[in-house]
Image (cartoon, rainbow over all chains, first blue to last red; front, side, top):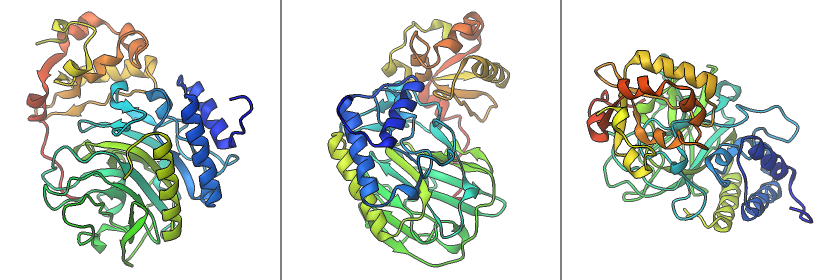
Length: 285
Length: 105
């Protein structure tokens, strides 16, 4: 892009996309660059260990996260590109109301390579933007968008969309983070949060944000997720193995993994995401 | 219906109506083939059915043509063997053979 100043993260992303066999249009470069500038402006850059806006001209492009570490000089958190399990090119759309990566059926997910045990209690966030609702109910009312679980210890580090009934199916875009996103599931869940008739996230940790607004919080026992399992998106890993039986059947437009976000930071992140969605002609939450 | 009975290239709309069903032994051979000729850009991961066989959405067939993410793997495969060994099943029929969804975690 001769004559344009590009953010170093944008330059890095373009190069990594090309190395993965993908390409990026000028309009996407400008949208990504503005997003990078917004994240800097809000002072959020070091909160992100990994962030993928799922954009670019092809699936190969979309598999390259914009951020793969908390700064340009830091060691990569996770794989160089997201490992694509069973998505095909036709599942991906860059722009429009359904832009993102659509699982369509269970069993499709991305493996980020980010280890769950690098985070401390009270110190992490998981987030994703859900563009379309689930297309069907799980009989247990539970599907997982991102995260990890250990059955032997009942320790979860995940974001899921536990639903009480079939009416709760609307598109949602959420940011999860806050004070203590790693804790025992035995501490209870956010089942009372969210409104009837609107989609909502349930997460088994103390703070939950939807569309940049905190839905609720609680302060119960937290402990470190101590296993070297890599975090998957569209599903959870259970005991180190991806659990396709609870994978989300929906389109996700982005995800991020990083340090915890307070309410102001979650709101600022949401603002940056909304601006990006407008520039990309994507659906707003 | 066997894989050999499908007409290639398979359109995405057609492919999404079917599942590819095969034995675990064949799955292991396919995984080995992917290790040699595939990439992290597309890793087909079959799900286990209650009868012990494995199944994949047939949409992966849209990636086997030249330029597709699985073309190199497809080109290196013994397509005659695959065509005979892989069963093509209606998607709904294959889903009915999946194990019950796990309890809340």
